[in-house]
Image (cartoon, rainbow, N blue to C red; front, side, top):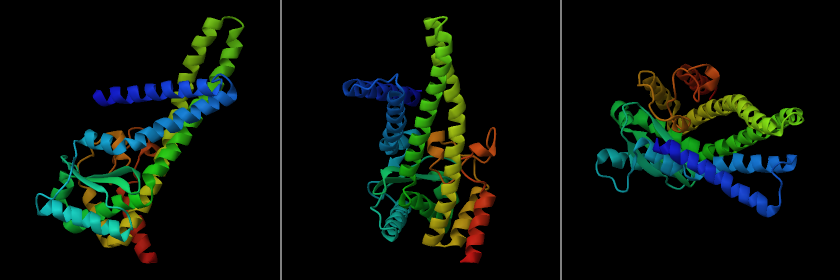
Length: 289
């Protein structure tokens, strides 16, 4: 409940600040240009604020603890693997965290390649061999090296802008038709129609975002295979087949090694490709290589 409230307050703050900026610049938010500027500011602003706060929000969401200094052999091994892969990828060592969860999972996030976080679940450390865990870490480090978090934020910003702008343009067209009869009714119709179309376009935008999420999972798998070998990555994915359903929040799932196994409505809303397809892609890559 606290996270929902924080999300709403953040978005209200973004709208308030951007509203002031538009007023200072003398931009009329009711004009087409003004609406486009507002949509872009709000669409990209919310996306990048989420990106900048991603490490803190992710850790709070899963109750993760950053390893400052290794307290045992397992934590030292984890730090050594992340440090070695960081050197291989020529990246600054990310923060490393462990969080309590039964499911076998890990995720990476952060605003930049050199200011990132890699977190693994206790379930992963307990269930996987060191070779398998190393492959999972390689997958997450590949997300960092590929700049997937920033790319996702940019894509989300474009999609948000499209949803806000097009929905309100359509709502304005309907409102103008009704305005001759009643201005009050036209105002109500504008907001109701805008909400309806934002919902419709928002669903379509989610499908595009999830398509990109699935696409980048294949690349992260391939990146891990280059770091540690295809056999280790395939073994890790095979282990995920028998794991618990991830219990992370939707905002975290997009950055995890293991996503939902079944979509509630359609495969188009899955953030991760089916494990069988990921394994097949790696095996085909091994044959080609």
